[in-house]
Length: 381
Image (cartoon, rainbow, N blue to C red):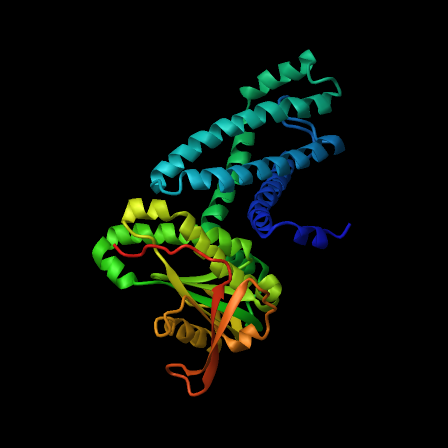
């Protein structure tokens, strides 16, 4: 079976979630093997140091490996799909306390399920056999029980650290750091979108900095799913502006870069009632799209990040800044339009050659609209 083909048959959102969850079982497996090796080295043999410990043989090792991977998958799924959203707006201390309580109970349940199965395999008797449960109750008061708690606790701690780092610097960035993909600068062909909230200065003045911050947080969260669904990568958040990037073939495929813009617009429109109630306005945005070659690599002394360097970024920013001049929501370079295969779902208006600020060469620009009629969005306070 070609697993690469199978992987790309999954939806972008499913691939995104799986790529974030899969490091959890890997961490559990690696830490589990490390603890086993340490115990073997300390004991000087494979024989258990306590009657409560499970003697290792091929069957038990295979079960333990499968079980640890399954526990990692379960915790990754719970952490990233449920708890991350549940505690997103909680304070750090509250988040830690709730998670500590939840995972303590979960780990006790996991041990209570897995140990009797492992004991059954070791003793080669059914799980309901009295020998299994005698050994289990003896295990609960023994040193191996606390050693097991420590092992799983360390695995869990590493997973939560990974999840926190991944959330703050981005899953794609942390993956690139670990794989060393951009340790040496490399040239890439990429598509960039510079997206900016309309009238943000006026909105910030009228809402005040605290409510404006809450607006921005909701604004970015509501855009996130459609960025993932159209395989974009968030390069930077800069105040009220977000820079989205695609590898050229990914952004070109199925017109992802264009569809992403209008999907994000629809996402905000679907949340109009929430924004109107919470902030007395519905945010709207404008964007510029362009493509070109960039040099990509790690940069920074006190804090490293993956950085793009190239004229295309400056040009895309200038294209976006011209949206107000033409009262347009989306301006795209003609060069990029020529690389796409848009159908009847988009309407194009060629604006001709435009002189961009700070650039000597003029550039052909197009205004792009969706062919589908979309309701007007109330933006005034």
